[in-house]
Image (tube, rainbow, N blue to C red; front, side, top):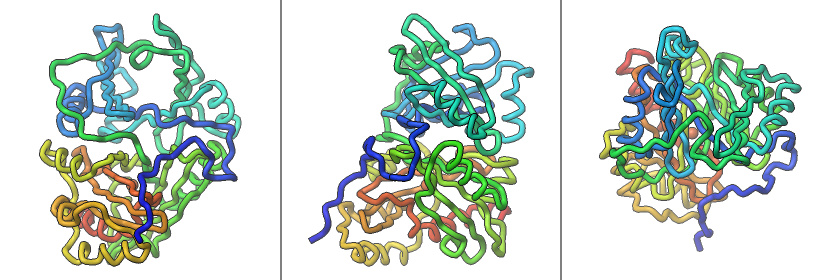
Length: 386
Ligand code: FE2
């Protein structure tokens, strides 16, 4: 009998006894990108990924130096921000990094406490606690720096019932492409420089009270040409998972080095978004023009039934459909997972997305790393960056 397989729905219960609760996190609040042209980027995320218009601030709302579009799909909120003049410091970020993630905002019950607890443990301040109000109530935000120029904002919205936060208005448009079934952010991965992984692992442990949930060394994550190391950090209730990668020595340039070269420093490498029906979601994204990495070879799919059998799991999806879309399968004791990766979504080979469907497994697709990295290396070879 195959084991009962169910989608993992992380509850509020503590999954790591050792994790400290000085920083209770309710979930991801939003992810903010600094981009060269937010209006066009918003069109891309709506058209290609099925995000919906949600909130806006710009000249019409009194925001004179930057414009922001907030897009929503189920629990996922993306903010796209562009400066409106050359004096804005946002320009420096875009010049250096290209379009990329500036803020990974975390939803908290008490932003002042989150700021105090983290800065007293060594976090560098980005923004002191600030309360913004309008007729719908109050939102308190505060921010700290993490790796590179990336920031964690703490967002307290328990006394607010407006659309997004003060300063924004509801964004309504006549162009509303259908959602693609993306539900929530499963994990967000950071790339850091040589010998920096353990520095940031310790930072997440000491400053944020996270725990090291899984580790992969370069012996596990390598191809013929390149290698990397990765440690997955998780908060106490398991809702926030941040794997941290660093490059490792290999014969050729790894994808992590390529990222660091083009992003010109540490930053967010990929955002993994969860779906309940990956075949439907990926079919729709492909039809919308989202570009994915190439399909793994035939031998990869031949090995899948054996890999599931080891753990006595039964694949509920049609493997031919998964193969036709290039979706990868990995299994562990608890279940299996289905995943696929987009190509970078900017011209610089930096940030990309992962689409993931968890069928019990809580891992990150370690069994797929080799096939995935070989696929990335084929792209790197085309770019001349391998
Ligand atoms: Fe991932």
